[in-house]
Length: 189
Picture (spheres, rainbow, N blue to C red):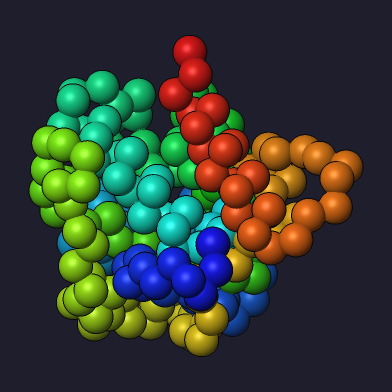
């Protein structure tokens, strides 16, 4: 939301591809081949709004994992589903996964931290980003890309990409709230 909400960086690294994506399957195959686990994924660049947005999606993922109520079979797919605000796996990949023509994406690592059982039982460790930076750098290298020195920011283009349509003009804070509200739709059944 703003600078008044100091949240540690989520373990996500922007990657700029040498050329726009031509074959999504081959790009995802590189990640699948070189990642340490299915807790690593590629996320559409505009699908990420902020540290708060990513940590909130992650917290929902961990809650769903702990409760045994994930819609998807794997954490990477469940995270995409939550970010895209849908119950449909195919739509989640369309909205939050990389697409043909994308020039940038986020390499995301989903920590398997314990979240506690009650409200306030969890605090975000500040080293999550740094602890996985070396693995992220290797994935960026395997993708033939370069690190984007930027953190996630909410955009109207990103809202449209994840399926949130509005004719209302919004400032950055309102857009972030729209991303968060849209994410809540992922578990409306």
